[in-house]
Length: 194
View 1 (tube, one colour):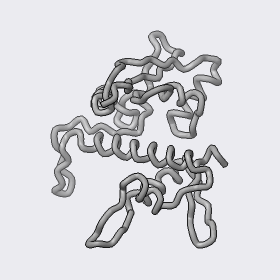
View 2: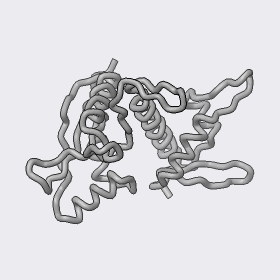
View 3: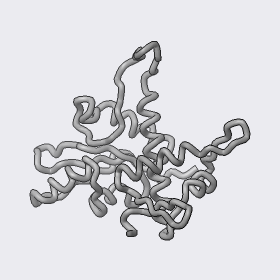
View 4: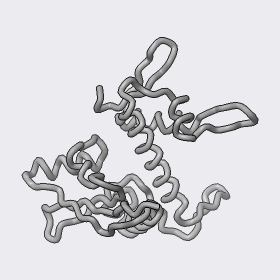
């Protein structure tokens, strides 16, 4: 088990003290990739605003030498504590903490933390598929994604692979990959390789 993970914060230096606006987990240079490769998410737009003001985004490693499971747990707890801007908090993360013990909507119980776990899980899947597309400049298919990443589904002996198709659709919507038709096949390519 690797202890190479850390949890980090991105801070806005335009206020004193610098205000945390993003919490994440990663290894290597992950924390700095947000600044090197600024994307079009709301976090990316905010980073651009900071840079255009002549300031530099501050990166702080909050906890180091963690397993991935430990990093996910700490990241989730911190995001829940600070809250996302969608929930009235200060973070530009896309995870949406519930902050309630149980919530009932249309007779559906949603236990505390399950939305966070689902959002963290989908973000991990999105990152994995984006990295897979980046590593294959000729593009990947939905079938490639399901097969090589071990995400094939089985519905009474029929392969459906809806999970990878859905995640690829989210990545398309976020402009993290592009879709290219090659003959009768649809391939997905890393947006920054094109």
